[in-house]
Structures are given as C-alpha cells and as structure tokens.
Image 1 (cartoon, one colour):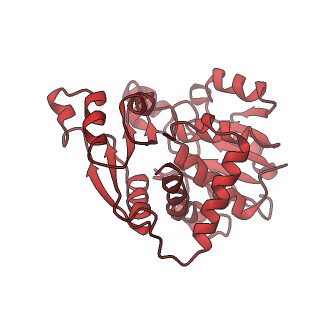
Image 2 (cartoon, rainbow, N blue to C red):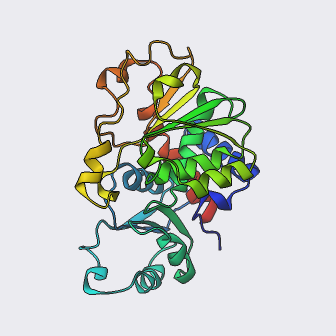
Length: 297
C-alpha cells in the first residue's frame, strides 16, 4: 500500500515523475474515469479552504466521490474516540483517506492503522506534501528548478509549507535564502538537514538585503494559531509587507508565491503585477492532487 505522508519519502526522480504526471493531466481535456466507483474520505480536523476543496475537486474530476468530516466537533473524536480508531473505521468505508490534523505526526500515525492509502494534507507544523508538490509545479511552470535563488519569507518556524518546500528544494542545485525575524527562523535541525544534503542556505532578517537577487519569493502568513500566547504573536505580526515599491528592483522574471490565506503580508496592489503567481499556484492544486490520487488508488 502506498501512502503519501512526507516529502522526505520522495526521491528527486519520483518528484519529477509526479510533476510530469500532473502536467499531463493539466494539459489533457478529460474526462477522467480513474476513480469511477471509488470513494475518498476527506478528514479535515483543522480549518482549510484550498486544500480541502481542491482535493474534493480532484476526486470529482477523476470520477470519484467524497465523504467529508470538516471538524473535530463533527466527528466521534469529540466524544473521546482516538484518531487510530477513527481511521480504522473510516478505512472500511472508503478507498483512500486524505487527513488534515493540527498535531504533527498525525498522518504517520493514521497510516499505521489505516487499511487504505493515506495522504497527508497537513499535520501541525510538520509536513504538507501536496502543497509542496504544487509549489514545485508552479515554479517549474516559470523556470527550471536548478540554478535559481529561492527566498522563503515569513513564519519559517511554525510554517509546515516552508519546512516541506525547503526539504524538497534540497533535491535540486539551487540556493535557499531564509528571511525571517529571529524568533521565526527556520528550525536549526532542518537547516542542518539541508546543509547535510549539500544545499546552500543563506539566512537574512531584512528582505531588502536580498530582494534584487531572488528568482522566487515564497511568502507565508505569520500563523497566530500556532503561537503559545498573543503577546508573542503581536511582537512579530507586522514584520514585513510585500509592496510594489519593494519589488521595483526585482529580477524581470522573478515570481511571488504564497500558500494562502494571506493576512496583510502582500499588498493587494501586487496582485496586478506579472510576478504575482499565488492564485495560479492555488489553481495548480487540482491537477497535482489528481496525480497524487491516481498514484495511490
């Protein structure tokens, strides 16, 4: 049985092959019948709009149907049932499970007890492999994944999307620039992993120090819900803001990505610039997740 839990489970060749399959789906007119007669459970124990809806769209476009749980309150976990028992039971109803959970490691645990494939749709500050694959896919639409400078900006401590993406990028010959306040830097163990894998990592606190050198700027929201208290959040809440003025000296082909939702870190005036690719990035979630579902079912 094939689970998709972490981007760390993928070799570079497997990532490239999956992106190729997503591209083939993207370029095909359909309809697709891969999941005709199949059901997929979407267990989302944490709020989500893009990930949940793009998985639902992906299943539907492949001919399948979904069974959905949208909150802890809407499930027997609110009565004290363990995640393991929930996964055991749901496995008997469906052909695959897509799980989003606030606790890091929940998807790995679910895979141990599931009798059907499990796809991790984000677990705490851990991993978010489907987001990472669509991030890579979006970059690859604009430029090769080699010889480029990628800036990761914002909440790099709690941001699972940046953790997954940074690790995935270390499969390629490129430079990662981390740009964050001291308290939100990329975790030291992850930086160590990237360096051990031969990736060049350069740390910055001020985006103006590096903005002219970047090919890709990946911005993230500062996630209030992951801070231990409100005071810690407000200390860094307005640490940066991407404006057209900031981007005046950018490289001509530089692109801006963001996993969304945004919360003030990107000026809406940036949306009209050709470098703003974050809505195309969200759209790419459907073909990439279609490719993932075809891979596991």
